[in-house]
Amino acid sequence: MAEIELPNPEELEEIQKKVFTRRVALVTAVFAVILAIASLGGNSAGKEVLLTQQQSSNQWAFYQAKVIREHLYGNLKTLLMSQFLGREGRMTHSVQSQYETILKKAEEEENRYREEKKEIETEAKKLEQERDLYRSKLPYFEYAEVLLQISIVMASISILASSGFLFSIALSFAVLGTASTVNGFFLIFRIPFLH
Image 1: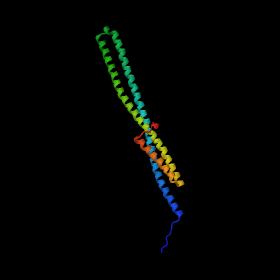
Image 2: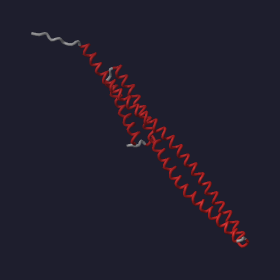
Image 3: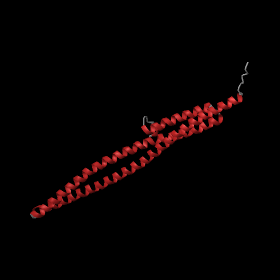
Image 4: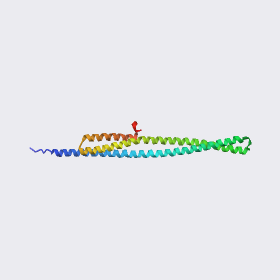
């Protein structure tokens, strides 16, 4: 009869620890990849907040310039009308015609600036909405980064302690971090205290 050699229990325990360590290390690498994606999303959202805020501010400044010009032509029109009314019967036909031409031009310019500022206002409000959207995404990325960093640390500790319990805690943080990352990109749900 052949002899059966039983494995040494210490060797089995060491092999089991290596398997656990490899699995945890592999999963931790996945956590790190998700963390990199969350970081990239957060950086991108932050840049978009700044960019759209700057563009919106530029549009509002442009809007103000149009308002000033609109008022300038409105005041010119009022001034011309007041001068015209005071001299109406004493002007020659050619002078009266020039007044009417200038008055008409001032009114056209006032109307043009009034219309142009409406388009600029619409664009500025659209940029503000875009900025607010990116701003609402930003906290999700920030919390995702924190949760994923905690999960990586907990997974590392679970390797050192050979603790499945600590690894399950790391998985919990990673799931929350992953959900927050996905939500940062798609805003599937909104958490009130983050807005």
